[in-house]
Every structure is written in structure tokens, then in C-alpha cells.
Length: 70
Image 1 (cartoon, helix red, strand yellow):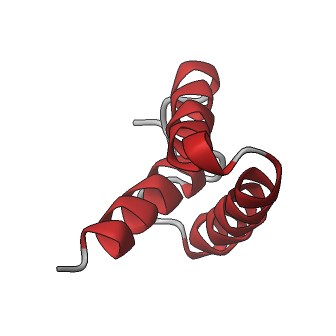
Image 2: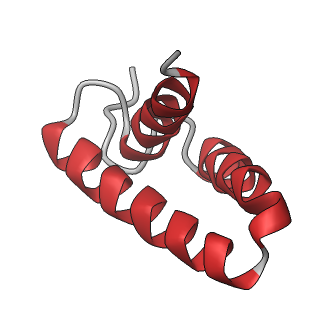
């Protein structure tokens, strides 16, 4: 139970950056929009698209979009 919410919140934290409230807001908006677009365009792989977005963010900015690099 709750695995879907856990996966989505993990992706939001990865995209937004750990410890950033602004990053969590932007990450949630990005994940929500990408998920809805993914469901409407190619519903078979919508979760894979979210993992791809998280992987791209980790490759470009390992701390997340608004995370602080230490």
C-alpha cells in the first residue's frame, strides 16, 4: 500500500533537491505535469518517463534543481 505515492514523492525530492521547499514545489509541478502528459500520450510507460526525468536531473544537477551542493 502506498507504493505509488512513495515513488512519486521520491522522484519529487530527487528533481527538486533535498532540503529545498521551493524545489519540492517546482519538483511536484514538474512531476505532475509530466505524469499527466505521459498518461495521455503513452500510458504504457508513464512511470518510466518519470524515472527518466529523475535520471536526467541527477546527471545534470546531482543536488536537484534547487538543492545546495555540499
